[in-house]
Amino acid sequence: MSDLHERREAMLDYLQEHARTHPQREAAIEGAQRLSYAELAQQVERVANLLRDKGVGAGQVLAYIGPPGIQYYVSLLAAFRCGATWVGLNPKYRSEELAYVIGHARPAMVLVASKADARSRNELALALGKSGANPSLVRAQDGPTGLAEAIAQAEAVQHSQAPQDDIVALGAAVLVYTSGSTGRPKGACLSASNLAENAWWLARRLGFEAGRFLINLPVNHAGCISDTTLVALLNGDCLVFMAEFDALQAGQLVRDEAITVLGQVPTQYQMMHAAGVLTPAFVGSVRHLGWGGSAMPESLIAYLAGFIPDLFNSYGLTESSGTISVTVRGASIAQLAGTVGLPVFEGAVRIVDAQGQPVAPGESGELQLHGRHVFPGYLRNPEATKLAFAPDGWLRTGDTGTWCEDGSLRLAGRLTEMYKSGGYNIYPREIEVVLESHPGVAMAAVIGVADPLWGEVGHAFVVPSAEGVSAEALVALCRERLAAYKLPKKIDLRSELPLLPIGKVDKKQLRNLVA
Image (cartoon, rainbow, N blue to C red; front, side, top):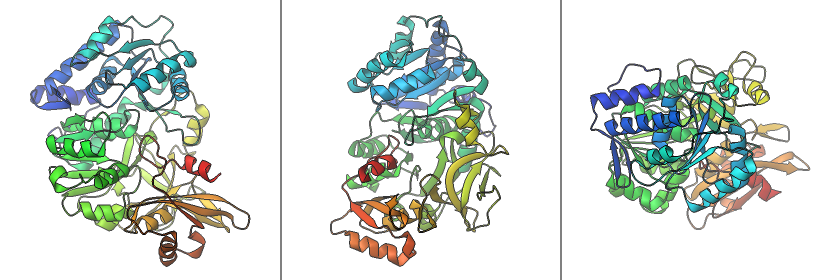
């Protein structure tokens, strides 16, 4: 871990400390552009002052659209500095989706990264007209000072953009919109103390020495903001940004920049493996390799364990400000494949039954959380906020799981994904794990579909990683390991599965395919 053992209340305290104690250490790299910690602190201060001059401050929202890069990093920290609430807009969204988020968040200013592609700029232009909002629009210029120069030349925010009382009441430092896979996205408000708490505990649990961290996750996701950017900042890491994920280029960048910490979703690792760059020749500098968001196939974990010193699996959610559990150093392949590790926060996780009573080890129930890392609520959505918490104040995750004998967590699935077949509760993740254990399977997803006899039955979608994989062989594998009522009644072999922007399988789209 970093030499900064003292706990800080705000993330900018870590930036200032790094700039003072090792000013010349590299802090951020994006292509040919490189910033030291001293230079990063200077840019953050300059941009924050310019934002204040333009009327952006406490109670107001600063939006950013573009890829992960230095302009993203500076804008996020500058928002912290001037007291504004930062929100990342998904550059993959279409205009209708962007219009909803902009209309709901009501940003005073929208920063457009110089590397934002033409498609996202066009969709943003359409969205602004549909949203009913009228933010100040700032198009960043290229170069190390391009963001600051563009803000300096921009018009001040309009007088109508007064501080939002509900933003102030929730103390939102960052606004993260959920994926919206089950409806309209909800704006989760994460406070400065939420973010600092998550970063400190997670960095403490991981125990990394300061190194070089690749970031290629979407900036509108908590995995990019909390679990990578802010943990790396606390730890004094150098962030190496990759604007757009490409499997071959990712391997080359890891090799050329001597990346020591790699955190991605399993889909990205699977794509790198298929491209031939998940090898010691390309990723030999990596000392710590982690994943989250979904499970990694056991065969790929076993392969990586042959040359990566430290593998870890994690679990978290937006409303908890990021990661809440991580596997221990030296975890077995079975633990990495079948569990999500031990809780990061002491005494902050419980598993309860439908009556809210704690379950015994091995029994399934809903995971619930509490602590300073748990968000205060959703922006302008008191109904959803109320539903998110149990009567005694614990956060309902909507995820089901069990306690293992060693105290680690094993996920079963989502409460909303659970289906009933012949009166039995079935959790899709249990079936997916069995399917992915087949050496010829790259990815699997299971959903429940209506059935006139059983009520619901399982429909599995499988992406083979080798030729010759048959549905019959996969059914036979499931029959060996699962009770008969859990067997999927249909196995659909496909070349790919629809994915959400964060790399998870889009099960809403799978249900549409079945329908």
